[in-house]
Length: 121
Image (cartoon, rainbow, N blue to C red; front, side):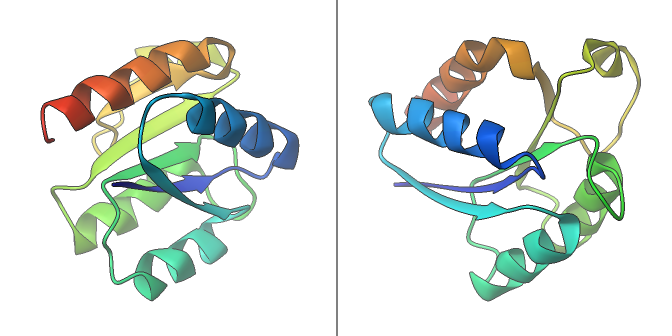
């Protein structure tokens, strides 16, 4: 089972992505949060047992990269994925981000999860 923490303040996008992930052939457990504080609470609640953190860049309170810095300080091996509708973000250097995905290209995100779950990463 792949454990994912999904953080995005857009509930419609979270619902859409969650449905698309459920329709994939992946065996998933998805925990949702709508802001970084709730995300960090869920991260600690589940004792940092997530395989992937998927977070939007533009969040209330702090941006996704700053949130991932905190996550990586607790678990440097966790795979952190940044998503955004602003595709220009992918061209910036964010040291705590393992991979960027545009919200308009969720199929690439699903392919990435499939490949990495197949490889056991």
